[in-house]
Image (cartoon, rainbow, N blue to C red):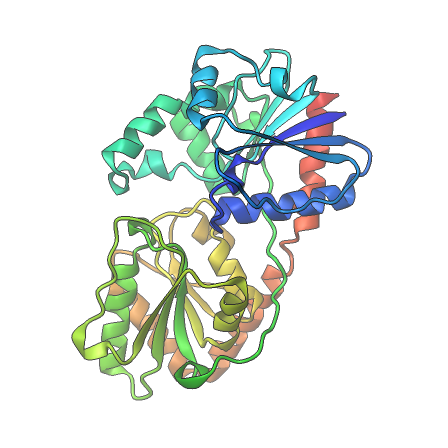
Amino acid sequence: MRIAIDIRALMEGKTTGIEVYLINLLNSLFVLDEKNEYILFANSFRKIDLPKFNHPNVKTIVTRYPNKFFNLAQKMGFPKIERLLGKIDLFFSPHWRVVALRETTPLVMTFHDLFFEIMPEFFTWRRRIWHWFMNYPTAAKRADKIIAVSESTKKDLVEMYGIEENKIEVIYPGVTPSTHSSPLKGEEEKPYFLYFGTFEPRKNIETVLMAYAAYYAQSKIKKSLIIAGSEGWKIKIAIPAGLRGKITVKKNVSEEEKSQLYQNAFAFIFPSFYEGFGFPILEAASFGLPVIASYNSSLAEIGKDFALFANPFRPEQFTNQMLRLEQDETFWGDLGDKGYRVAKNFEWLETARKTLQLFEEIAA
């Protein structure tokens, strides 16, 4: 079987959930499957450093067209992607980007979330128009099978796009096993509360700051706070004047530093308004960190057996959970142990096995 996979999501060099999903899924898929032939499709005008997939049955084709060319082709229905890639038995889009395909070519798509539909106010008008132009409901209906990364995302697809439930397969992503690094130096060696994620409005970093300010006023120990992650958009982190010595902001951290931050933290705070899966809470749990998260979307689903929950619109609820963890060492340890055990069940090889099984069923 000749399987084409759209890897254009890797062109920007970011490490958001989609990129993490794609790289880890492919690495595991190619370990499992030496029988089928894989064609990885990428497109970029500039020079790009793609991950190296050194397998004899894997080939990468990189074109130099504007991405708008493929978007327009998809809207018009031609030229078909097969003109570039040759005959294929199945096309897999691991994100929302779609291409023009022959009607007889099976299509499998992964939907990570429908945040742009559920909370459009968090997007610029330009992005909203772009999402409208791309017409994801039509793409979803064209797909022979849809992979949803959570039951929450499946529910959104059914309710918002009218997709039949039996067309959607929930396949959980995995979690990369925690790698322990050398301790951080200086003030950060002391246990601290940690937020890690993209800096953007939907992540609700303002609630982290408000919850921490109230915690600092009430706590006798007064642990510090680290806010870390990758640059997003439309957000400026304003640290209250009285807390500038206790709050540290780290931007664009490396994988090594991310492991250090998780390893040395006291607890993880994640008050996001919406998540399709919520990689950060499982990553934190894989280090044995207690997690305080929003009770919404997939976070309530994924974290149900190990996380403490709070309303993302109520910072005081996060404050109360922070104080609770600090004041009860036994509870803190038990919660961390629970999360660690749960995180071990999310394996990329299992994600790849179920995905490959789906490919074979659809292309049969």
